[in-house]
Image (cartoon, rainbow, N blue to C red; front, top):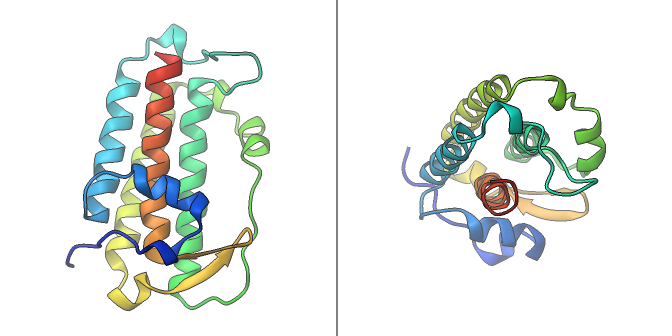
Length: 172
C-alpha cells in the first residue's frame, strides 16, 4: 500500500482537525507508529509508585489516561470500519469520563495496560493498511460530526500525541 496522505480540511470538523494537526509527518501509518513509540517512551519513565498519580483532584491517573487512549483508538477504528464499509447510519458519541470511571485501569498495572495498547495499535495499523484508497475517502457521521475514514486515522495519531504532551507536561 502507498502512503496515506494527510486529510483535506473538509474531511473533518474543526474539533477533529486540532488532533489531526498534532500527528507527525505526512504518512498515516508512520504517524501512528511514531505516536505509539512516543507514548511507550514516556510510559517507560513512569516509576511503579507513580502509575496512579493524578496531577490534580478529579483528573485521570496516568493509567486512566493510557486506557482512554486505548478506548478512543478502538472506538475510532470501529467508526473507520463502519464508514469504509459504507455505513450511512450516524454513530453515537461516547462520554470519556464515564469510560474512564468504569475502565478499572487503576486496578491494573501500567505494563499490562501498555501491553494492551500495543495489541490495539497493531490492530489499528492492520485495519488502516487494509483500506483501499476509495475506502479512506468515505465520509460518515459520528457524534454529530462528519469525518472521513482517513481523518479518523489521523485523529487517532494526533489524539495519542495530544495525550503524550499532557503526560509530559502535567504528570512527569
